[in-house]
Length: 250
Image (tube, rainbow, N blue to C red; front, side):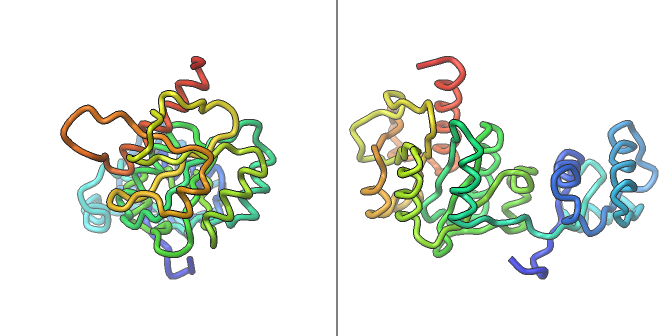
């Protein structure tokens, strides 16, 4: 992403998360005039500490810029976050004992990607991996839907997803693909240890090579009339099944 891809984020938590991890990304901050409380005062101190330009503006200016969102009276113009590659991913995994990854094969809708990032961050995942081609990357819309997760969650774009899966497997990561045609329930899979949950798009699911490269295919039990769930819903269920197993035992 180039400098022209700078975008606005909003909300105290999201802005503080960037200030804590990558303050050099924050170009300027706008806070509604006469807005003061303990959290705003703390934010003001952090902005001053980093020497970031600050504006006090009418609330209608934030409403016009951001639309109908809960901005909490603050917004910041930021540079895009760092996007890692396959080498970054494999290096970062060496710092983890039992990494949990979410791999998205061809998700193109920024709202779906943003929702997946939000679920992954909430579940404590160690990163999200997407292919470089025919897939959504980080955008202002993704950041908005992710509600701060896009600013802090490691994000990787790889040239060849199947090759990356094989490299992860060589590093000891168990790759579990979610597929409606699978015969094994996700709830019967062991999601302890190093695990990558691999999801495809709603329409076509996992691509053939991705599906064939996974160690195991699993499905979510579907008891109603619908045949599939939105990818972000599936991601949330799968991630929290991994969390459940890791915290409570199978």
